[in-house]
Image 1 (cartoon, helix red, strand yellow):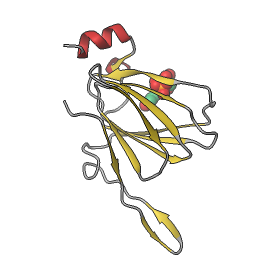
Image 2 (image 1 turned 60 degrees about the vertical axis):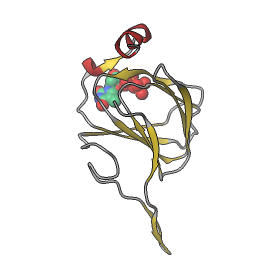
Image 3 (image 1 turned 180 degrees about the horizontal axis):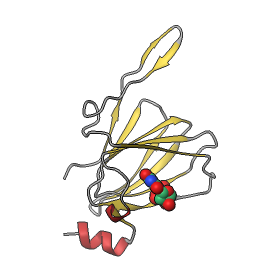
Length: 133
Ligand code: TYD
């Protein structure tokens, strides 16, 4: 399995303003089958608290900023998403929690699979069983 990582999308801009492009299976390493966005999150809220069996995701703060805590058992780390050009490629085996949402935060998520509740691992003990090997 791949390791989650931060990549950067090119900023295309001219005197009118800025533009960034993401194409399916190009810069991000999977075909996008689902898009959702998280917004209006209260600043003190922490959400996520799960890993996946197969879904790969790309997280981008298209407005504002937030932090993402990642735990793949071997390493635990925090990523600050504070630019529309910064993309967190989040692999299924990372337990993740999003927190410290700014008031204006819009967190865009591109996902490799359609929504399937069965693909979620929401129990940390189960997560360790599945990925602790
Ligand atoms: P949830 O997984 O609790 O969000 P988070 O992991 O960010 O804390 O999702 C909130 C609700 O939205 C939950 O009832 C499931 C539903 N949902 C969908 O129906 N489709 C989706 O693609 C996603 C991401 C969530």
